[in-house]
Length: 303
Image 1 (cartoon, rainbow, N blue to C red):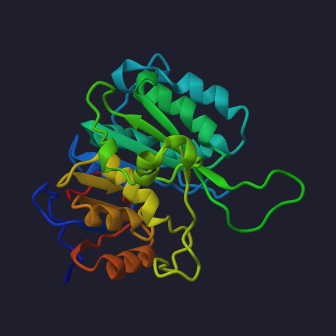
Image 2 (image 1 turned 135 degrees about the vertical axis):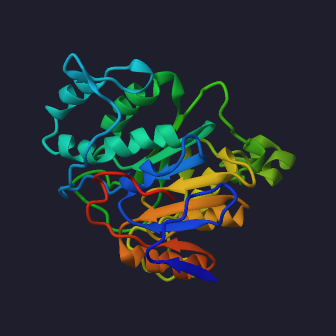
């Protein structure tokens, strides 16, 4: 049973139900408590030329003309230098950067951030996440490789995305290799019969097909990610009962993975169609509806 709440905004509780929230994800994130989530997965719109609205900024007063990042790190200079190399970068990062700041705040001390991008922005994101989180908090660059769709004859066909992995504390993060699905060895004869039968722990290159256009997993949502990719992320970096957050939830794959593994979730999207897809896909949960207008202004909603 799905409970819809059109006006009342319940306070989020670690003992409450799973949540699907319709609204501006920056405002929603600002209404969530510090350190509440063990896994945060972000799959933002890739920078393909779409103009993003510039949100207001809070919580980091200027110092000598430059803002300070977490732990006192200045990173305005880094961002300004990179902006000179990409005319669209500054606008895109004005959209994404405050959401990453909130992700850092919302991560538990043993938490992990997964940022899913493609080749257009990932190199910029890596430099700026180093400044925001600290280079020592960088854990992995995962390459998700797939083999589907058209192939250009004028360049190497682009058939991968990149997932940057950062932890809140490099000495305390949770990673459970035993919980991760195994892959077949590429040369099983070299591994031995016992190891070949058990399979190997995936490396930082994940060969996984996209969602089949005719498969049972397909919801019809255009940017749907495969359940297998999100299951691997959630299984490795959280425990049963932990909370998982997705601020660009889309078709709700993160929630489906979390529920299947006994985790709790908060999913956010400002697209009513996405919310409908998630409600159908996930069934039970608490659906919170609220007005999107002026959502990045004034007092954030309390969830």
